[in-house]
Length: 189
Image (cartoon, rainbow, N blue to C red; front, side, top):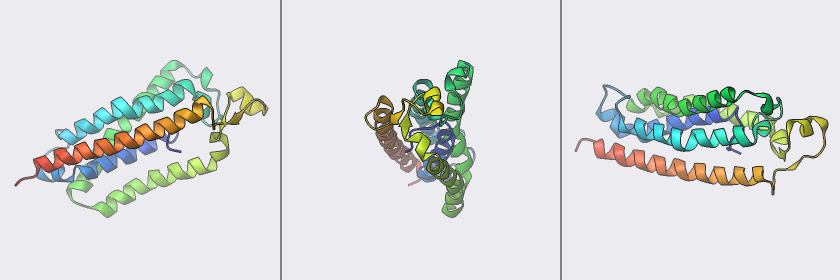
């Protein structure tokens, strides 16, 4: 379940940034001066702003209690906190790209995978530990009071999770394809 509890989103964004850096290996290798000027970074940032942050923000805005696994009443969070979380999520993809770029430039796949493995394992562990909480659709009050909640299957939340996972997978594939195209075009001939 990638879409998108608030505690998983930044970890996933960081890993996606690392993957995008690896996809840009030729572009990064051809210009060792700066990562910040790379066109692949721009594509990664666009992915983050147009797909990733809104997706994570959707779950906080419309299914906030689920997004925080019913540990807190998300309705009591100030809207500024939700906005700050969305902005933080938007930053995780380019931060992952920038931190992964030197490893991609040096073709150190093992180190890059190690760097990606830690947040990936943490995200999987959190989702597994909280699977029971994430498998139901409810409000904070319903979950804490043990009434009125139901499986996410067939609910608006369940449909959103399925839809957003499909959108995320498609957007990641298209972003990687575009970064590869840009990266291969910048390779010296």
